Image 1 (tube, rainbow, N blue to C red):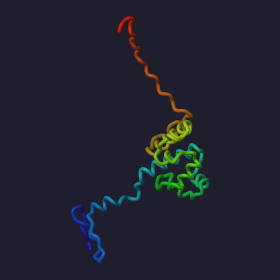
Image 2 (spheres, rainbow, N blue to C red; image 1 turned 90 degrees about the horizontal axis):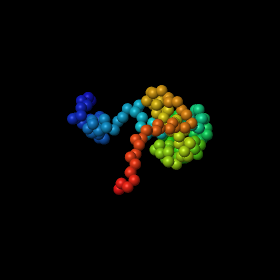
Image 3 (cartoon, rainbow, N blue to C red; image 1 turned 180 degrees about the horizontal axis):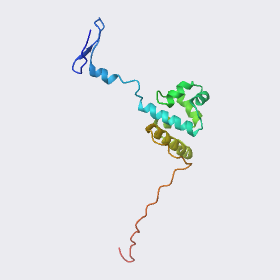
Length: 161
């Protein structure tokens, strides 16, 4: 049985008592290529790699041994193929010294100041690698913004209202 797949015509499965008839655009909307990664997973993976860099953990296998997981699962989390569920994320939190808010959402509010700065720099490097840009030079503190020259204020003259 051949079927002309066009957006106007429904897809008709093989002839049987349970054959399904659905519009082709439904199939296109629900089926995605396997190579597409969930952007949320990719961001969690970048934050996980940044925390590993900040904690001087060199491999996924080393982190896996610390939290009692397999190396392949930790590699999948780190490269954005999947994300850790809450029980695993709690073990990551305890091992890496990060908060669940930071790991899942990127919110640094619960992190101590120096750790938040180091993680931000490491994450900046991870995002640069994701975009294919050169990795930025890291420093222990963020550079101070340049001071802008301010125009002198006009002083009120004595006796003027």
